[in-house]
Image (cartoon, rainbow, N blue to C red; front, side, top):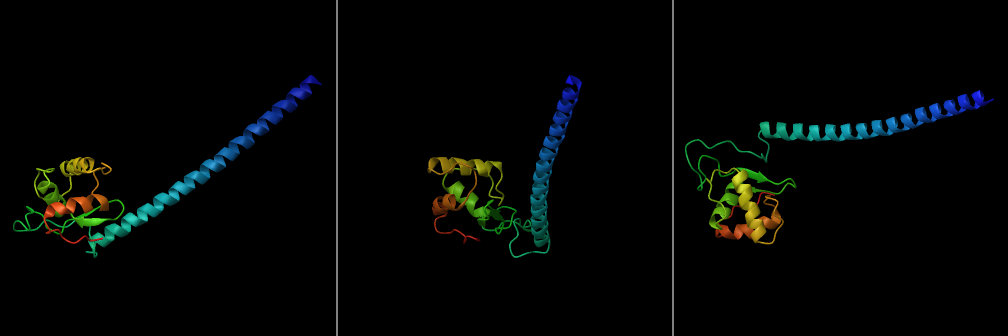
Length: 158
């Protein structure tokens, strides 16, 4: 009789183990499938943006270097180089650099590229002006920074 109870108990424990494992595997599979769907959506969006940039879409995040010198104080890079935040706010990168330079925060080259030095200048400007110091020149940062261009700010793209 004790042998029968032990076998029954062992059988019940084994079934519970299998059922519990299956439930967690199903949940895991659902989570993996949801993440894979998100990755596919993002990959499609990247492909769309890439093909738009290659075909010369209306708004390209990067412009080609200008041949033959400077334009509007930007050495070797087209004045139309666009800076885009993760939220989609866009404006000319050269304007950001010029405003930072005029405000005394940036001493790098005016090359139309927002690199590490420019991002650190943005952070310093943000700290000094009570903004979130994330190194991203978003709408709030630009609203305060553009005054240092002295009225020569290019229009905001988006």
